[in-house]
Amino acid sequence: MNKNYNFAFLDEGSKREIRRASLKAVAIPGYQVPFGSRELPIGRGWGTGGIQLTLSLIGPDDVLKVIDQGSDESVNAVNIKKFVGLCADVKTTTDTREATLIQTRHRIPEIPMTNDQILVLQIPIPEPLRVVEASEEATKRMHAEKDYAPIWLELYESLVKYKRIAIATEYPCMVEERHVMNPGPIPKFDNPKLHDAECLCLFGAGREKKIYAVPPHTKVVSLAFDDVPFERESFAGKRCRLCGSAHTYLDETFDALTGEKVYQCSDTSYCKEARGQCV
Image (cartoon, rainbow, N blue to C red; front, side, top):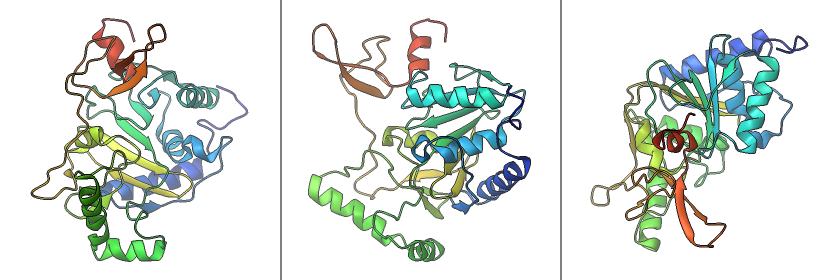
């Protein structure tokens, strides 16, 4: 560890403040808790809310995994691991099962997480009502009054226009039948993984200064009409070109040699494990 930094970079007072906000978020699932977002030596678009949660929670005995759009080797994931390694002497891994703390952007791992793990999600816009209401004061009042009619109207308009609810990411969820929550820029394929999950899920938005949580075994239901049920992305008839998986989230890409359209697992750790490779 670089001795010029406090352990995990943030000062201890900042860590305590973020932990207190996290505890309140756990106590009220889906509720957005304001916190004093700190400055970090990285751009705001790099997921500073998630990084602040990670730096506040991580300890010397933790094992850290960082993924970006399912990949352990993206620029975002690699540089976050380098930053944490610079200021905290902790082990890093690409193995979902080995990690005690996983920070992610855009995906939830395919391998189900356990009760002794924490999932930290980087969130750009935490407010699910922002697409229908620009005023922060108005959205707070709407949450307090459980007035989610504009969200339902947005879903209905999408259904009328496209004959289906064409929301691919940030698909709104109802948490414990009380708060509508933005699960972040994960594909709606991952939404069901939040329901009754074994692990603690924490969501951090640095620019918006909000933290919210889904504790273990919490009821999380994606919004849908009675006669138009929620549907995940379908990859029927498609398989990962590397491991052959037909039940995971697949990225569409092109074969460099043939130029043909191919599919492969977004979750690189799962794909390697399925092929019997060491992760």
